[in-house]
Length: 506
Length: 99
Image (cartoon, rainbow over all chains, first blue to last red; front, side, top):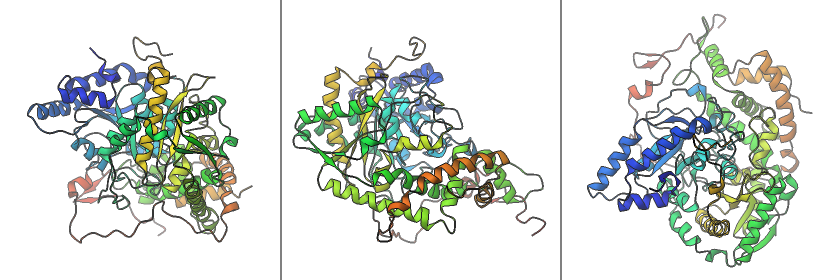
Protein backbone atom coordinates (compact mmCIF):
# COMPACT_ATOMS: atom_id res chain seq x y z
CA UNK A 1 0.00 0.00 0.00
CA UNK A 2 1.17 3.58 -0.74
CA UNK A 3 2.62 5.51 2.16
CA UNK A 4 -0.17 8.04 2.58
CA UNK A 5 2.14 10.53 4.28
CA UNK A 6 4.33 10.79 1.18
CA UNK A 7 1.49 11.93 -1.08
CA UNK A 8 0.95 15.56 -1.96
CA UNK A 9 -2.29 17.03 -0.61
CA UNK A 10 -3.63 17.12 -4.18
CA UNK A 11 -2.87 13.41 -4.72
CA UNK A 12 -4.28 12.47 -1.31
CA UNK A 13 -7.42 14.53 -1.98
CA UNK A 14 -7.85 12.65 -5.26
CA UNK A 15 -7.70 9.28 -3.47
CA UNK A 16 -10.14 10.53 -0.83
CA UNK A 17 -12.60 11.77 -3.44
CA UNK A 18 -12.46 8.47 -5.35
CA UNK A 19 -13.03 6.51 -2.16
CA UNK A 20 -9.72 4.65 -2.52
CA UNK A 21 -8.63 5.97 0.88
CA UNK A 22 -10.66 7.20 3.85
CA UNK A 23 -9.89 10.31 5.83
CA UNK A 24 -9.58 8.14 8.94
CA UNK A 25 -6.83 6.12 7.21
CA UNK A 26 -5.05 9.27 6.01
CA UNK A 27 -5.31 10.93 9.41
CA UNK A 28 -4.16 7.79 11.24
CA UNK A 29 -1.14 7.53 8.91
CA UNK A 30 -0.09 11.07 9.80
CA UNK A 31 -0.71 10.56 13.54
CA UNK A 32 1.48 7.43 13.33
CA UNK A 33 4.16 9.40 11.54
CA UNK A 34 4.01 12.11 14.23
CA UNK A 35 4.34 9.43 16.91
CA UNK A 36 7.37 7.98 15.10
CA UNK A 37 9.36 11.12 14.35
CA UNK A 38 8.15 14.07 16.39
CA UNK A 39 10.17 13.21 19.48
CA UNK A 40 13.17 14.05 17.27
CA UNK A 41 11.72 16.86 15.14
CA UNK A 42 9.46 18.55 17.73
CA UNK A 43 7.33 20.26 15.10
CA UNK A 44 4.18 20.01 17.24
CA UNK A 45 3.33 21.69 20.54
CA UNK A 46 -0.02 19.91 20.70
CA UNK A 47 -1.49 16.98 18.78
CA UNK A 48 -5.28 16.91 18.51
CA UNK A 49 -6.98 14.18 20.55
CA UNK A 50 -10.01 14.08 18.26
CA UNK A 51 -8.54 14.32 14.74
CA UNK A 52 -9.81 10.81 14.01
CA UNK A 53 -13.36 11.80 15.03
CA UNK A 54 -13.23 14.77 12.68
CA UNK A 55 -11.92 12.50 9.92
CA UNK A 56 -14.65 9.91 10.59
CA UNK A 57 -17.26 12.65 10.31
CA UNK A 58 -15.86 13.68 6.89
CA UNK A 59 -15.94 10.04 5.78
CA UNK A 60 -19.58 9.75 6.90
CA UNK A 61 -20.55 12.92 5.08
CA UNK A 62 -18.80 11.74 1.94
CA UNK A 63 -20.51 8.34 2.16
CA UNK A 64 -23.90 10.04 2.49
CA UNK A 65 -23.30 11.77 -0.83
CA UNK A 66 -22.62 15.25 0.54
CA UNK A 67 -20.76 17.58 -1.83
CA UNK A 68 -17.39 18.25 -0.16
CA UNK A 69 -14.58 20.69 -0.98
CA UNK A 70 -11.47 19.60 -2.91
CA UNK A 71 -9.37 19.23 0.29
CA UNK A 72 -12.03 17.53 2.44
CA UNK A 73 -10.48 14.86 4.63
CA UNK A 74 -6.89 16.05 4.18
CA UNK A 75 -4.96 16.60 7.45
CA UNK A 76 -3.70 20.08 8.33
CA UNK A 77 -1.13 21.36 10.83
CA UNK A 78 -1.82 24.79 12.34
CA UNK A 79 0.81 27.26 13.54
CA UNK A 80 0.23 28.01 17.20
CA UNK A 81 -0.12 31.74 16.48
CA UNK A 82 -3.61 30.94 15.13
CA UNK A 83 -6.31 30.56 17.78
CA UNK A 84 -8.40 27.38 17.94
CA UNK A 85 -11.35 26.51 20.17
CA UNK A 86 -10.47 22.83 20.53
CA UNK A 87 -6.72 23.01 21.15
CA UNK A 88 -4.54 25.35 23.26
CA UNK A 89 -3.10 28.42 21.54
CA UNK A 90 0.15 29.72 23.04
CA UNK A 91 1.99 31.54 20.24
CA UNK A 92 5.06 29.74 21.60
CA UNK A 93 4.92 31.69 24.87
CA UNK A 94 4.76 30.66 28.53
CA UNK A 95 2.52 33.65 29.17
CA UNK A 96 -0.26 31.88 27.20
CA UNK A 97 0.39 28.32 28.39
CA UNK A 98 -2.88 26.39 28.26
CA UNK A 99 -4.87 29.29 26.78
CA UNK A 100 -8.13 28.09 25.20
CA UNK A 101 -9.59 30.56 22.74
CA UNK A 102 -13.35 31.14 22.80
CA UNK A 103 -13.31 31.50 19.00
CA UNK A 104 -11.49 30.14 15.94
CA UNK A 105 -9.24 32.24 13.72
CA UNK A 106 -10.99 32.84 10.39
CA UNK A 107 -8.41 30.74 8.51
CA UNK A 108 -9.12 27.89 10.96
CA UNK A 109 -12.91 28.12 10.66
CA UNK A 110 -12.60 28.24 6.86
CA UNK A 111 -10.30 25.20 6.94
CA UNK A 112 -12.77 23.31 9.11
CA UNK A 113 -15.65 24.31 6.82
CA UNK A 114 -13.65 22.97 3.85
CA UNK A 115 -13.35 19.61 5.62
CA UNK A 116 -9.64 19.80 6.46
CA UNK A 117 -8.71 17.76 9.52
CA UNK A 118 -6.66 19.72 12.11
CA UNK A 119 -3.84 17.47 13.36
CA UNK A 120 -2.34 19.81 15.92
CA UNK A 121 -0.56 23.08 16.65
CA UNK A 122 2.97 23.70 15.45
CA UNK A 123 5.96 25.17 17.24
CA UNK A 124 7.22 28.67 16.61
CA UNK A 125 9.46 31.38 17.99
CA UNK A 126 7.65 33.08 20.87
CA UNK A 127 5.06 35.48 19.39
CA UNK A 128 6.72 34.82 16.00
CA UNK A 129 9.86 36.71 17.00
CA UNK A 130 12.77 34.83 15.49
CA UNK A 131 14.26 33.01 12.51
CA UNK A 132 15.05 29.64 14.09
CA UNK A 133 12.27 28.54 16.54
CA UNK A 134 14.97 28.65 19.21
CA UNK A 135 12.97 31.42 20.89
CA UNK A 136 10.02 29.09 21.50
CA UNK A 137 9.30 28.80 25.23
CA UNK A 138 8.74 25.08 24.63
CA UNK A 139 12.10 24.20 23.10
CA UNK A 140 13.29 24.35 19.48
CA UNK A 141 12.08 22.43 16.45
CA UNK A 142 14.78 20.52 14.56
CA UNK A 143 15.34 20.54 10.81
CA UNK A 144 14.32 17.16 9.29
CA UNK A 145 17.32 17.40 6.91
CA UNK A 146 19.76 17.57 9.83
CA UNK A 147 18.47 17.40 13.39
CA UNK A 148 21.35 19.53 14.67
CA UNK A 149 20.18 22.44 12.54
CA UNK A 150 17.43 25.07 12.73
CA UNK A 151 14.19 24.63 10.73
CA UNK A 152 13.92 28.39 10.22
CA UNK A 153 11.52 30.64 11.96
CA UNK A 154 9.31 31.79 13.20
CA UNK A 155 7.22 29.08 11.56
CA UNK A 156 9.81 26.32 11.84
CA UNK A 157 7.22 23.93 13.27
CA UNK A 158 4.88 24.18 10.27
CA UNK A 159 7.74 23.87 7.76
CA UNK A 160 9.33 20.93 9.60
CA UNK A 161 5.94 19.20 9.90
CA UNK A 162 5.43 19.17 6.12
CA UNK A 163 9.12 18.44 5.40
CA UNK A 164 9.05 15.45 7.79
CA UNK A 165 5.80 14.16 6.23
CA UNK A 166 3.93 14.67 9.51
CA UNK A 167 1.32 16.73 7.63
CA UNK A 168 0.72 17.38 3.93
CA UNK A 169 -0.38 20.97 4.59
CA UNK A 170 0.21 23.58 7.26
CA UNK A 171 -0.79 27.14 8.03
CA UNK A 172 1.87 29.71 8.76
CA UNK A 173 2.22 33.44 9.33
CA UNK A 174 4.80 35.75 7.79
CA UNK A 175 5.74 39.09 9.33
CA UNK A 176 9.28 39.39 7.92
CA UNK A 177 9.81 35.98 6.31
CA UNK A 178 8.40 33.50 8.84
CA UNK A 179 6.78 31.40 6.09
CA UNK A 180 9.38 31.84 3.32
CA UNK A 181 12.64 31.44 5.27
CA UNK A 182 11.56 28.15 6.92
CA UNK A 183 10.50 26.92 3.46
CA UNK A 184 14.01 27.76 2.20
CA UNK A 185 15.86 25.81 4.90
CA UNK A 186 13.54 22.77 4.84
CA UNK A 187 13.10 22.26 1.09
CA UNK A 188 9.39 23.12 1.18
CA UNK A 189 7.03 25.70 -0.36
CA UNK A 190 5.74 28.78 1.44
CA UNK A 191 3.70 31.77 0.34
CA UNK A 192 3.20 35.14 1.96
CA UNK A 193 0.06 36.50 0.26
CA UNK A 194 -0.55 40.15 -0.56
CA UNK A 195 -1.15 42.04 2.71
CA UNK A 196 -4.89 41.76 3.35
CA UNK A 197 -5.34 38.79 1.01
CA UNK A 198 -5.91 36.43 3.93
CA UNK A 199 -7.72 37.34 7.15
CA UNK A 200 -5.64 38.05 10.27
CA UNK A 201 -8.67 37.62 12.57
CA UNK A 202 -7.57 35.22 15.29
CA UNK A 203 -3.88 35.43 14.40
CA UNK A 204 -2.22 36.57 17.63
CA UNK A 205 -0.81 39.90 16.43
CA UNK A 206 2.92 40.55 16.23
CA UNK A 207 3.14 43.62 13.95
CA UNK A 208 -0.26 44.42 12.52
CA UNK A 209 0.92 46.30 9.42
CA UNK A 210 3.26 43.43 8.44
CA UNK A 211 1.61 40.16 9.54
CA UNK A 212 0.06 37.91 6.89
CA UNK A 213 -1.20 34.32 7.12
CA UNK A 214 -0.37 31.88 4.33
CA UNK A 215 0.11 28.25 3.22
CA UNK A 216 3.08 25.98 4.03
CA UNK A 217 3.27 22.89 1.80
CA UNK A 218 5.49 20.57 -0.25
CA UNK A 219 4.19 21.61 -3.68
CA UNK A 220 3.02 24.84 -5.31
CA UNK A 221 -0.32 23.29 -6.28
CA UNK A 222 -0.97 22.24 -2.67
CA UNK A 223 -0.29 25.81 -1.56
CA UNK A 224 -2.77 27.09 -4.14
CA UNK A 225 -5.44 24.64 -2.98
CA UNK A 226 -4.99 25.76 0.64
CA UNK A 227 -4.82 29.46 -0.29
CA UNK A 228 -8.16 29.07 -2.11
CA UNK A 229 -9.67 27.80 1.18
CA UNK A 230 -8.30 30.44 3.56
CA UNK A 231 -8.19 33.57 1.37
CA UNK A 232 -10.62 36.34 0.63
CA UNK A 233 -12.37 39.16 2.44
CA UNK A 234 -13.35 38.74 6.08
CA UNK A 235 -15.56 41.35 7.76
CA UNK A 236 -13.83 40.48 11.07
CA UNK A 237 -10.55 41.91 9.72
CA UNK A 238 -10.89 45.53 8.65
CA UNK A 239 -7.57 45.33 6.78
CA UNK A 240 -8.63 42.34 4.69
CA UNK A 241 -9.09 43.31 1.05
CA UNK A 242 -12.42 43.22 -0.76
CA UNK A 243 -10.73 41.93 -3.87
CA UNK A 244 -11.93 39.37 -6.38
CA UNK A 245 -9.16 36.76 -6.15
CA UNK A 246 -8.74 34.13 -8.88
CA UNK A 247 -8.26 30.46 -8.02
CA UNK A 248 -4.62 29.96 -7.03
CA UNK A 249 -4.87 26.21 -7.58
CA UNK A 250 -5.95 26.93 -11.16
CA UNK A 251 -2.99 29.33 -11.51
CA UNK A 252 -0.61 26.62 -10.26
CA UNK A 253 -2.03 24.05 -12.70
CA UNK A 254 -1.75 26.52 -15.56
CA UNK A 255 1.81 27.41 -14.54
CA UNK A 256 2.94 23.79 -14.47
CA UNK A 257 2.69 23.66 -18.29
CA UNK A 258 5.65 26.05 -18.41
CA UNK A 259 4.05 28.36 -20.99
CA UNK A 260 4.31 31.28 -18.57
CA UNK A 261 8.11 31.23 -18.81
CA UNK A 262 8.14 32.22 -22.49
CA UNK A 263 8.92 35.92 -22.49
CA UNK A 264 8.60 36.23 -18.71
CA UNK A 265 10.73 39.13 -17.48
CA UNK A 266 12.49 38.14 -14.26
CA UNK A 267 14.17 40.93 -12.29
CA UNK A 268 17.39 40.28 -10.41
CA UNK A 269 18.40 42.90 -7.89
CA UNK A 270 21.79 44.46 -8.69
CA UNK A 271 22.54 45.43 -5.08
CA UNK A 272 21.78 42.07 -3.45
CA UNK A 273 24.86 39.92 -4.24
CA UNK A 274 26.90 42.21 -1.98
CA UNK A 275 24.95 41.08 1.07
CA UNK A 276 27.04 38.03 1.90
CA UNK A 277 25.28 35.04 0.37
CA UNK A 278 26.68 31.56 0.94
CA UNK A 279 28.32 30.29 -2.28
CA UNK A 280 26.03 27.26 -2.61
CA UNK A 281 22.96 29.48 -2.19
CA UNK A 282 24.11 31.81 -4.98
CA UNK A 283 24.99 28.87 -7.26
CA UNK A 284 21.59 27.24 -6.76
CA UNK A 285 19.91 30.58 -7.46
CA UNK A 286 21.90 31.15 -10.65
CA UNK A 287 21.21 27.66 -11.97
CA UNK A 288 17.45 28.06 -11.34
CA UNK A 289 17.54 31.32 -13.29
CA UNK A 290 19.45 29.60 -16.11
CA UNK A 291 16.79 26.87 -16.25
CA UNK A 292 14.10 29.54 -16.61
CA UNK A 293 16.14 31.40 -19.23
CA UNK A 294 16.49 28.18 -21.25
CA UNK A 295 12.67 28.03 -21.38
CA UNK A 296 12.38 31.56 -22.74
CA UNK A 297 12.45 33.77 -19.65
CA UNK A 298 14.40 36.99 -19.84
CA UNK A 299 16.64 37.89 -16.88
CA UNK A 300 16.69 41.65 -16.32
CA UNK A 301 18.95 43.44 -13.86
CA UNK A 302 17.01 45.93 -11.76
CA UNK A 303 17.99 48.34 -9.04
CA UNK A 304 16.40 48.46 -5.59
CA UNK A 305 18.72 50.87 -3.80
CA UNK A 306 16.66 51.12 -0.61
CA UNK A 307 16.31 47.41 0.13
CA UNK A 308 19.53 47.63 2.15
CA UNK A 309 17.64 49.84 4.61
CA UNK A 310 14.83 47.30 4.92
CA UNK A 311 16.19 45.33 7.87
CA UNK A 312 16.83 48.54 9.81
CA UNK A 313 13.34 49.90 9.10
CA UNK A 314 11.80 46.54 9.96
CA UNK A 315 13.53 46.34 13.34
CA UNK A 316 12.03 49.71 14.23
CA UNK A 317 8.50 49.19 12.88
CA UNK A 318 8.12 45.61 14.15
CA UNK A 319 9.19 46.27 17.76
CA UNK A 320 7.13 49.46 17.86
CA UNK A 321 3.97 47.64 16.77
CA UNK A 322 4.79 44.57 18.88
CA UNK A 323 5.33 46.59 22.05
CA UNK A 324 1.81 47.94 21.59
CA UNK A 325 0.21 44.61 20.58
CA UNK A 326 1.78 42.72 23.48
CA UNK A 327 0.52 45.23 26.05
CA UNK A 328 -2.61 43.08 26.28
CA UNK A 329 -0.69 40.41 28.21
CA UNK A 330 -1.34 42.19 31.48
CA UNK A 331 -2.17 39.30 33.89
CA UNK A 332 -5.78 40.50 34.14
CA UNK A 333 -7.94 39.02 31.39
CA UNK A 334 -6.06 35.91 30.25
CA UNK A 335 -2.71 34.22 30.47
CA UNK A 336 -0.21 33.95 33.27
CA UNK A 337 -0.47 35.84 36.56
CA UNK A 338 2.47 35.89 38.98
CA UNK A 339 1.30 37.11 42.37
CA UNK A 340 3.28 39.73 44.28
CA UNK A 341 2.26 39.64 47.95
CA UNK A 342 1.04 43.10 48.95
CA UNK A 343 1.73 44.44 45.45
CA UNK A 344 -0.53 46.58 43.29
CA UNK A 345 -1.95 45.40 39.99
CA UNK A 346 0.93 47.17 38.24
CA UNK A 347 3.48 45.28 40.33
CA UNK A 348 1.74 42.04 39.39
CA UNK A 349 1.72 43.04 35.71
CA UNK A 350 5.42 43.93 35.69
CA UNK A 351 6.40 40.73 37.50
CA UNK A 352 4.16 38.57 35.28
CA UNK A 353 5.61 40.07 32.11
CA UNK A 354 9.17 39.55 33.35
CA UNK A 355 8.49 35.90 34.16
CA UNK A 356 6.15 35.14 31.25
CA UNK A 357 8.06 36.66 28.33
CA UNK A 358 11.30 35.21 26.95
CA UNK A 359 14.48 37.19 26.30
CA UNK A 360 13.80 37.99 22.64
CA UNK A 361 10.28 39.22 23.38
CA UNK A 362 11.52 41.50 26.17
CA UNK A 363 14.31 42.74 23.89
CA UNK A 364 11.86 43.74 21.18
CA UNK A 365 9.29 45.27 23.55
CA UNK A 366 11.99 47.42 25.15
CA UNK A 367 13.36 48.37 21.71
CA UNK A 368 9.87 49.27 20.48
CA UNK A 369 9.15 51.28 23.61
CA UNK A 370 12.39 53.17 22.97
CA UNK A 371 11.58 53.77 19.28
CA UNK A 372 8.18 55.20 20.18
CA UNK A 373 9.28 57.37 23.11
CA UNK A 374 9.08 61.15 23.01
CA UNK A 375 12.17 62.69 21.46
CA UNK A 376 13.07 59.58 19.45
CA UNK A 377 9.84 58.98 17.55
CA UNK A 378 10.67 61.12 14.49
CA UNK A 379 14.28 59.95 14.23
CA UNK A 380 13.44 56.24 14.46
CA UNK A 381 9.83 55.23 13.86
CA UNK A 382 9.11 58.23 11.60
CA UNK A 383 12.24 57.58 9.53
CA UNK A 384 11.45 53.86 9.27
CA UNK A 385 8.04 54.70 7.84
CA UNK A 386 9.73 56.85 5.22
CA UNK A 387 12.01 53.95 4.29
CA UNK A 388 8.83 51.97 3.76
CA UNK A 389 7.76 54.53 1.15
CA UNK A 390 11.19 54.34 -0.53
CA UNK A 391 11.03 50.54 -0.70
CA UNK A 392 7.54 50.72 -2.18
CA UNK A 393 8.91 53.10 -4.82
CA UNK A 394 11.78 50.68 -5.57
CA UNK A 395 9.19 47.95 -6.14
CA UNK A 396 7.03 50.21 -8.33
CA UNK A 397 9.99 51.11 -10.55
CA UNK A 398 11.12 47.48 -10.75
CA UNK A 399 7.66 46.18 -11.66
CA UNK A 400 7.47 48.74 -14.46
CA UNK A 401 10.30 46.74 -16.06
CA UNK A 402 9.76 43.14 -14.96
CA UNK A 403 6.92 40.69 -14.22
CA UNK A 404 8.48 39.16 -11.11
CA UNK A 405 11.57 39.74 -8.99
CA UNK A 406 13.73 36.75 -8.03
CA UNK A 407 16.11 36.48 -5.07
CA UNK A 408 17.59 33.64 -3.05
CA UNK A 409 15.04 33.14 -0.24
CA UNK A 410 17.67 33.60 2.49
CA UNK A 411 21.43 34.25 2.61
CA UNK A 412 22.52 30.85 3.99
CA UNK A 413 21.31 27.28 4.35
CA UNK A 414 20.12 26.04 7.77
CA UNK A 415 22.61 26.97 10.47
CA UNK A 416 23.33 24.98 13.61
CA UNK A 417 21.03 25.26 16.61
CA UNK A 418 22.69 27.66 19.05
CA UNK A 419 24.95 29.24 16.42
CA UNK A 420 23.30 32.69 16.38
CA UNK A 421 21.17 32.61 19.52
CA UNK A 422 23.45 34.99 21.45
CA UNK A 423 23.83 37.46 18.59
CA UNK A 424 20.45 39.09 17.92
CA UNK A 425 21.84 41.29 15.16
CA UNK A 426 23.16 38.31 13.15
CA UNK A 427 19.82 36.58 13.65
CA UNK A 428 17.99 39.63 12.30
CA UNK A 429 20.08 39.63 9.09
CA UNK A 430 18.60 36.25 8.07
CA UNK A 431 15.56 38.14 6.87
CA UNK A 432 17.32 40.55 4.49
CA UNK A 433 15.70 39.10 1.36
CA UNK A 434 12.21 38.50 2.77
CA UNK A 435 11.56 41.72 4.73
CA UNK A 436 11.04 44.12 1.76
CA UNK A 437 7.86 42.26 0.72
CA UNK A 438 6.32 42.74 4.17
CA UNK A 439 7.26 46.41 4.28
CA UNK A 440 5.65 46.97 0.87
CA UNK A 441 2.73 44.53 1.29
CA UNK A 442 3.56 42.60 -1.90
CA UNK A 443 3.25 38.80 -2.15
CA UNK A 444 6.21 36.41 -2.11
CA UNK A 445 6.76 32.69 -2.64
CA UNK A 446 9.69 30.45 -1.78
CA UNK A 447 10.13 27.14 -3.61
CA UNK A 448 13.07 24.71 -3.45
CA UNK A 449 15.80 25.48 -6.01
CA UNK A 450 18.16 22.64 -5.04
CA UNK A 451 20.81 21.66 -2.53
CA UNK A 452 23.86 23.75 -1.70
CA UNK A 453 27.01 22.04 -3.01
CA UNK A 454 29.08 22.59 0.12
CA UNK A 455 26.65 21.18 2.72
CA UNK A 456 23.91 19.29 0.84
CA UNK A 457 21.20 21.36 2.52
CA UNK A 458 18.11 22.82 0.81
CA UNK A 459 18.06 26.22 -0.84
CA UNK A 460 14.97 28.19 -1.85
CA UNK A 461 14.34 30.74 -4.57
CA UNK A 462 11.96 33.58 -3.82
CA UNK A 463 9.72 35.30 -6.35
CA UNK A 464 8.00 38.59 -5.61
CA UNK A 465 5.10 40.10 -7.58
CA UNK A 466 3.12 43.35 -7.38
CA UNK A 467 0.34 43.59 -4.78
CA UNK A 468 -2.77 41.57 -5.77
CA UNK A 469 -0.73 39.50 -8.26
CA UNK A 470 -0.41 36.40 -6.06
CA UNK A 471 -1.65 34.24 -8.95
CA UNK A 472 1.44 35.23 -10.96
CA UNK A 473 3.62 33.70 -8.22
CA UNK A 474 1.68 30.44 -8.41
CA UNK A 475 2.10 30.31 -12.21
CA UNK A 476 5.82 31.11 -12.13
CA UNK A 477 6.48 28.97 -9.04
CA UNK A 478 4.71 25.95 -10.53
CA UNK A 479 6.54 26.38 -13.84
CA UNK A 480 9.98 26.36 -12.22
CA UNK A 481 8.99 23.61 -9.78
CA UNK A 482 7.95 21.40 -12.69
CA UNK A 483 11.22 22.06 -14.56
CA UNK A 484 13.39 21.38 -11.50
CA UNK A 485 11.55 18.28 -10.29
CA UNK A 486 11.90 16.83 -13.80
CA UNK A 487 15.62 17.62 -13.84
CA UNK A 488 16.09 16.05 -10.39
CA UNK A 489 14.02 13.00 -11.30
CA UNK A 490 11.71 13.57 -8.32
CA UNK A 491 10.94 16.03 -5.52
CA UNK A 492 13.88 17.46 -3.56
CA UNK A 493 12.47 16.01 -0.32
CA UNK A 494 13.07 12.50 -1.71
CA UNK A 495 16.71 13.18 -0.93
CA UNK A 496 16.13 14.10 2.73
CA UNK A 497 17.44 11.53 5.22
CA UNK A 498 14.79 9.19 6.61
CA UNK A 499 13.68 9.83 10.16
CA UNK A 500 12.41 7.79 13.08
CA UNK A 501 12.95 4.29 14.36
CA UNK A 502 14.01 2.77 11.02
CA UNK A 503 15.76 5.87 9.77
CA UNK A 504 18.84 6.84 11.69
CA UNK A 505 18.71 10.44 10.51
CA UNK A 506 21.78 11.47 12.45
CA UNK B 1 27.47 55.19 19.55
CA UNK B 2 23.89 55.47 20.68
CA UNK B 3 22.84 56.67 24.07
CA UNK B 4 21.50 53.46 25.57
CA UNK B 5 22.36 53.46 29.29
CA UNK B 6 21.30 51.09 32.09
CA UNK B 7 19.12 53.86 33.55
CA UNK B 8 17.34 54.32 30.22
CA UNK B 9 16.73 50.56 29.88
CA UNK B 10 15.35 50.44 33.42
CA UNK B 11 13.05 53.36 32.61
CA UNK B 12 11.88 51.66 29.40
CA UNK B 13 11.12 48.56 31.50
CA UNK B 14 8.88 50.69 33.73
CA UNK B 15 7.09 52.14 30.68
CA UNK B 16 6.64 48.65 29.21
CA UNK B 17 5.57 47.16 32.57
CA UNK B 18 8.37 44.61 32.63
CA UNK B 19 10.23 44.31 35.93
CA UNK B 20 13.71 43.70 34.58
CA UNK B 21 16.37 42.22 36.86
CA UNK B 22 19.75 43.95 37.15
CA UNK B 23 21.29 41.20 35.04
CA UNK B 24 18.69 41.71 32.33
CA UNK B 25 19.22 45.48 32.36
CA UNK B 26 22.96 45.00 31.91
CA UNK B 27 22.58 42.49 29.09
CA UNK B 28 19.89 44.50 27.28
CA UNK B 29 21.91 47.70 27.49
CA UNK B 30 24.76 46.19 25.48
CA UNK B 31 22.50 44.42 22.99
CA UNK B 32 20.22 47.41 22.39
CA UNK B 33 23.22 49.66 21.93
CA UNK B 34 24.48 47.44 19.08
CA UNK B 35 21.02 47.09 17.55
CA UNK B 36 20.23 50.82 17.71
CA UNK B 37 23.61 51.67 16.17
CA UNK B 38 22.68 49.43 13.25
CA UNK B 39 19.08 50.51 12.71
CA UNK B 40 19.77 54.24 13.10
CA UNK B 41 20.87 54.19 9.46
CA UNK B 42 17.22 54.68 8.43
CA UNK B 43 17.76 58.41 9.03
CA UNK B 44 20.36 58.50 6.19
CA UNK B 45 17.67 58.30 3.52
CA UNK B 46 14.59 59.54 5.40
CA UNK B 47 14.73 63.08 4.07
CA UNK B 48 11.94 65.64 4.74
CA UNK B 49 10.52 65.30 1.19
CA UNK B 50 9.70 61.58 1.63
CA UNK B 51 6.18 60.90 2.95
CA UNK B 52 5.76 58.25 5.66
CA UNK B 53 3.90 54.98 4.96
CA UNK B 54 2.03 53.52 7.92
CA UNK B 55 0.21 50.79 6.06
CA UNK B 56 1.31 48.80 3.01
CA UNK B 57 -1.97 48.82 1.08
CA UNK B 58 -3.97 52.05 1.01
CA UNK B 59 -7.31 51.53 2.72
CA UNK B 60 -10.43 53.62 3.25
CA UNK B 61 -11.99 53.72 6.67
CA UNK B 62 -14.19 50.68 7.18
CA UNK B 63 -17.74 51.07 8.44
CA UNK B 64 -20.42 48.56 9.34
CA UNK B 65 -24.01 48.82 10.44
CA UNK B 66 -24.46 49.67 14.11
CA UNK B 67 -25.93 46.30 15.06
CA UNK B 68 -24.55 43.57 17.35
CA UNK B 69 -22.00 41.35 15.61
CA UNK B 70 -20.66 37.95 16.69
CA UNK B 71 -20.45 38.36 20.44
CA UNK B 72 -18.75 36.35 23.17
CA UNK B 73 -20.78 35.39 26.23
CA UNK B 74 -19.62 36.69 29.64
CA UNK B 75 -18.58 33.10 30.46
CA UNK B 76 -16.40 32.98 27.34
CA UNK B 77 -14.86 36.34 28.16
CA UNK B 78 -13.94 35.17 31.66
CA UNK B 79 -12.97 31.59 30.80
CA UNK B 80 -9.22 32.39 30.65
CA UNK B 81 -9.13 34.96 33.46
CA UNK B 82 -6.52 34.23 36.15
CA UNK B 83 -9.13 35.34 38.70
CA UNK B 84 -12.72 36.50 38.46
CA UNK B 85 -15.78 37.08 40.63
CA UNK B 86 -19.36 38.22 40.03
CA UNK B 87 -18.87 38.31 36.26
CA UNK B 88 -15.82 40.57 36.51
CA UNK B 89 -12.03 40.24 36.33
CA UNK B 90 -10.56 40.34 39.83
CA UNK B 91 -7.20 42.02 40.47
CA UNK B 92 -5.20 43.16 43.49
CA UNK B 93 -5.10 46.76 44.73
CA UNK B 94 -5.17 49.37 41.97
CA UNK B 95 -3.39 52.00 44.10
CA UNK B 96 -0.31 51.59 46.27
CA UNK B 97 -0.01 53.10 49.76
CA UNK B 98 1.87 56.17 48.57
CA UNK B 99 -0.92 57.00 46.14
